[in-house]
Amino acid sequence: MDWSEVGEFTKAVAPIFTAGAACTGAWIGWRGLEKWRTETLGKRQAEIAEATLASVYEMEDILRAAREPWVLPHEMAKKEGVPDETATSQDYAPEARLLERQEFFARFRSQKFAFAAVFGLEAAKPLDELWQYRVKINCAVFTLLRNKEMPTRSEEHRVFIEGQREIAFRPSKSEDDTLGKRISEQVSNIEYTCRPAIEARAKL
Image: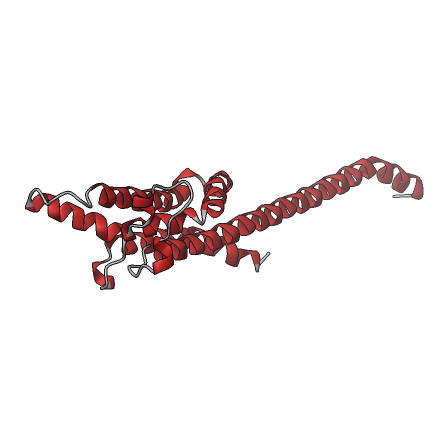
């Protein structure tokens, strides 16, 4: 093979090498884009998981504090916009405590949608459950207030009222606190979703 043939051969294979280089460059670029997307999504998931988990821990603490069985004298003072008979009843204390955290509850409810968008509606169900427990406390409080002056009509009614009291106020024995156990269970469910996303961020 003389130099003229070498030149012709080089001309013939040059486009192949050029195409190969272009493909390699495109593949490297695609890999880089995928890595960027994965890292960006991972960071976003971790941020939402961390914020949501922190709110869930706060929610757990708020619900526990609201159900504190000891009611202090200042908690039974008259309150603006609340009938005196209601405000001065110790049975109203759990709801009064929760009303002080309305700003948090609004933030907690809106946070659910960002969480569901990233982790799915199924994963967000514990957030709904925790909110429902807040509603259950509200219903239990007003059931106690409505039945305060009513005589116990039957054993079944007495058991019902005691059950409502155990929702509004934490029982003295933790093993008897059914609502408290349910709250802890939902916290664990959220941890199950959030922890892997938070820990994965350290590996990105």
